[in-house]
Length: 333
Image 1 (cartoon, one colour):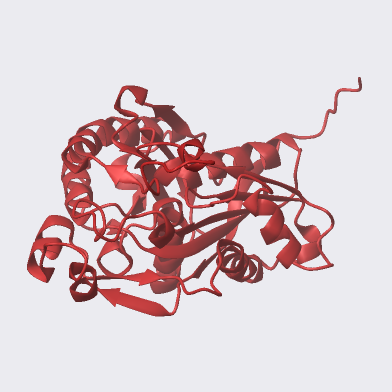
Image 2 (cartoon, helix red, strand yellow; image 1 turned 180 degrees about the horizontal axis):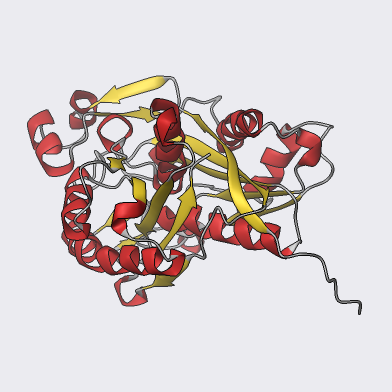
């Protein structure tokens, strides 16, 4: 085996993209299925509305739309993509991998890219971004398209008062490309699996096979448990991610946490003592919790709304089912 002596290279986010379904669903419509009110939902979560995907807005179609925008923003052609990573928790098919469908929709110009899925719940994008960074920096890939996409409306029970109002649908994407200087820090990630049942399907699909089972395995969530875990544990993860990147809170221009709940974001902003100058992503009010799509969607919208932040450092933080978490510092495109 020949050992390459090529110069050390790094990886950066070259472009971002997003896709939102056409249908806007307000709290009043959600309340039709649960015993709740707009005032209660806003007070508990900060959410006013979310998007639900229509029949033609499949995971692959939404992921492709977000990915196409990210490629255009990066100035990278389809032919240059040699790996596609899709992250989702709402793909209802075990095979083929969703990433292969996204790669197929890129068209005949795509040069048979590697394609695989990552299922790490709401931390999925940060997991996939860390993997893409290592693939590019290590030379296994030149350009990686990372897509976070969800149809949470397919897996959340519209009559479950604890979760029906929280989730929405959408897609976000980034292109990871080689760079001369570090643009994505090493990922800080892990699991607190003793809380594995806090966000989970109550039973698996096998119980529906060939016999009457306990019904469709909608996602269930222990809200208070998840909230307490997030507002305490994620401060430690965020500080570890900053330390891994060798930066301080004062070096940040933006903070992009998983858009789970505005109260969680408020608690993290306070716990990290973020300066007022730091831009904080707060898309949950308009989009709800889009799980693995929430961080890339929020990142894309922040880049679009605040172009002056380009070139600055942003802390990304994902957390959710597993319970899993991941965070890293990136330089904004």
